[in-house]
Image (cartoon, rainbow, N blue to C red; front, side, top):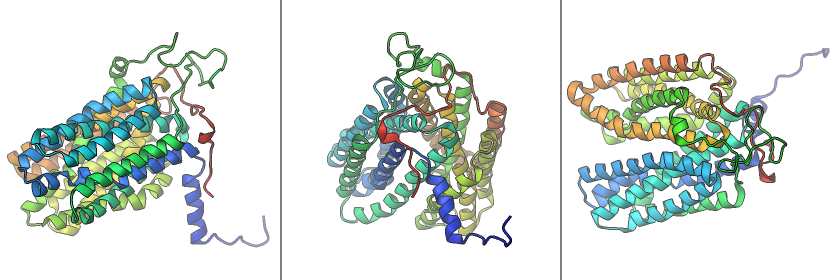
Length: 450
């Protein structure tokens, strides 16, 4: 021991060390994928302002705007499964590139067409193309990042999504003041830039070998089986995914949490409006969700890294349910902001942990399919949540919504703990192990933060 006490590191030094430990050690290809996600979300103007564009600029009815939003969601639901299958069959990179280019073209078309039927059709296509690449992104991260780092990697990606959303939501209002067409042009341009980043820097990561048992082996290793779809390779079809009881139960619980989450953008503004609050009040309150995620997602990830994921998901569901349940007692803007803070904490815990668990539940050569079916839980919830809010608000008012959210939060918390307890780190028996990332080319070499 030194004869004198060592000086404590200063705040700046501690923050620097924490930052390096958070972002260090991840593959370079992951950071290029992260950058492409950030660029894409920075220009995500259209979805946020689509209803305003249709009702204010194009003078369509709110009912038609709702129909267009539903068709967008329908396209996304189909894409969740189709994109996952394509990511496994033709590769992650081609699927992501095709989805990005298709989204750019369809977004621009949506801003240029005038007949109602053409707008509805274009919205469905945008919903499909913009969601078709998401399973590929999740599969690439699962391919590149070892299991121990996946929660951290998915947290960083989720952080990028929310940084982009916060910026685009603020910028879209300013851009729209100069013409809504600029929103569509800007969205299409950033989506194309995302495709350029993927094309230039993100490698194909789809595994080219498939061991029948034991650890993953590098391409060309003795005893390795051919790739998915190759001669002698056991195929994991969509039916096998749907017959996986543990995974489908996990998807079902995620669907229920998605129905609760949806009330933040459906029931909450209606209830606040009925209580005399303005749209500006609601905007400020709900914007706290994105601000908290941008500020706290990384520190929270550091705090919970390595902890039991069943407990994390259980706590997240309770926080989400209780956060919405507290809304029943809200009478002032600060109290509404408090409820948003509580359910946002649940969201920050749940999303990265859930993505990591899906990666661990997925056999290597079916990661795209698994991620696609998992995404279907969220797109399916986007259909049911509005119906749920409408029926409950009509039958029992806001209190019925918040009580239902509390009950669903408790049910899903118990469900996650019951389903996952004792199953980590090997959540389900698969034909492959997920102890190491799939080797890729030199672009995926590990880098540390400087």
